[in-house]
Length: 183
Length: 204
Image (cartoon, rainbow over all chains, first blue to last red; front, side, top):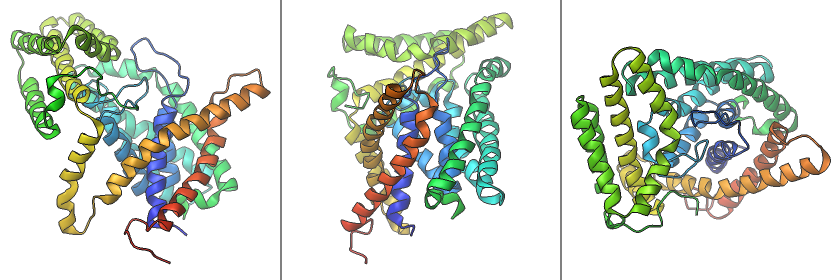
């Protein structure tokens, strides 16, 4: 049975999971923000928890980043993150998780396939739209420049979409009761 | 401790978190209204002075926190120079670097529990529409506790993987990590309920 306490713990757990995935060994990039599994956590939060809980979970995560916990990839954190050029991505985490969850809930096909589609839309299309929008707002007209930098992260993110689908496919077999987006 | 609060004490540490955040918001809005590189250099200079006023070690710490930005800012500047508008480039770089430094200053000088108290206080008007700030406080505490637990679990799984394989444990450990922590989540939720749950009263 899904209780309020379960919901709260799951929301906190996925916020913590995103933080830990940001700390796993990463591929460093010359401009400072490494390729990490962090956005995998965002996709998973949406795909496992569903729209509302997934969004709340990522809201909690970026709230803690704002409070000064160094939870973002590369140990970044604090209020400075929200005025730096990549602020749009961080602010986009809850939106991305929400959309991923929404797509996951509305698709009534195989959980593994739907989580792949959901994380592609939420974790790549929505997240990049927010990230590029933020870059554009904070740097006036660096739009084209931002797209060229950010494109280098897309191959990694496509791998994460596949990983999300694999994890969800395994989860649906091992612990279907934990896949709250399909309850 | 898992926070960015600086060990180097500054007079700013004694200010109230709400006042610091309020001043920061005003400063950042002002920075985004300024367009002249001269005024923005003035603001950057003042910010640097503020850091140095708290000691060279503190200033060095502040500079280290700006490091992840250097390539992005360099790229923006270069881009604007290529576009033939270096003045705007300098303005953007100065504005962003100053805004991030000021925000970091609040982060460096404010303790986590003070900020959590402030968040709870800001959330307290929600009481009038029937929402309690208690779940918020509890979930913050849960994340702060979960992060080291998950990290330790991830390290254990990496070790177990390395003991059995010559490959590097990258994404192989993610699935077992998630399954194992989902079990933990059930136990934690049960323990919360056993202790009165979110409503603070026992429910069968």
